[in-house]
Image 1: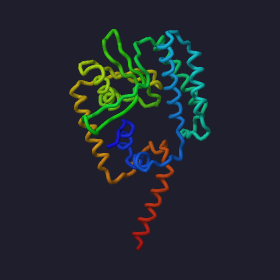
Image 2: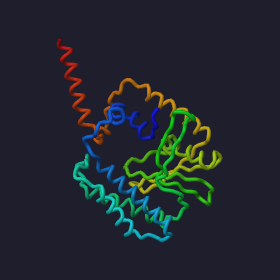
Image 3: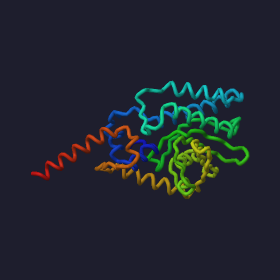
Length: 266
C-alpha cells in the first residue's frame, strides 16, 4: 500500500479522474502551474524564511527585508508559462497581492517570537500500525509557553474563507496533530491555527482524542476505497479551470463521446 498524503486523498475526493492522471498514470501535466500556486509558494517560502531567520539569529526583521525576500522567491520560480485563469488580473496584480499579505501579517505578528519549534516539519503517521500511512509537512509548529499547547500553523493564500463548522471538520491539520501527539504525548493539547492571508484573519480549532481516533478510522476507510477503485469518473466543477490536466481530460472526454455516438449509430 502506498504512503498517502492529505493532498492525494483530497484529489481523489474532488476528482477521481485527476487522481488517475496524476498518481496512477503519472502523466506529465500540460499546465506547469497556476499563478495562484506560484503566489502561494512564494509567500510560504518567505514566511518560512522569516521564522527560521528569527530562530537562528534572534534579530528583528523589517518589513523591507521581508518584501525583498518575497521578491527573490517570486522571481526564482517565475515562468511565462504560468496559467492565469482570471484574465482581468495581471501577474503584477498577483505579485502585489502577496506583498499585501506579508505587510498585513507583519504588523499583526511581528516580532515573530512566539515559540516556533520548526518550519516545514515533515511528519509520518501510521494510522493502523501496519500499512496505512500518511505523510505531510507542517508549515509551522509552535510550543506556546503561556498555554502549554502545541500549535500547528497553516498559511492559506486563497480567497476562500471557511466557516468555523467546516474548520472543525478539516482533515489535514487534524491528521498532523495525531503525529505531534505521537511525538510529544497523547495527553498534550494541540491547537490548530489557520492564517487566511487574503482576509488577514486567524482561525483556530481543536480535536479531542476520541475525534482523532474516529478520524484515523475514516481515513483508513478512505484509503481502502482508493486502493480498491476500478473506475475513475471525472467530476466537472469550477476547479476544472485550474486543473493542470484539463486539456488532456477534455480531449479524452471528446473521444469518449465520439465513440459513444458511433456505437449508437450502428
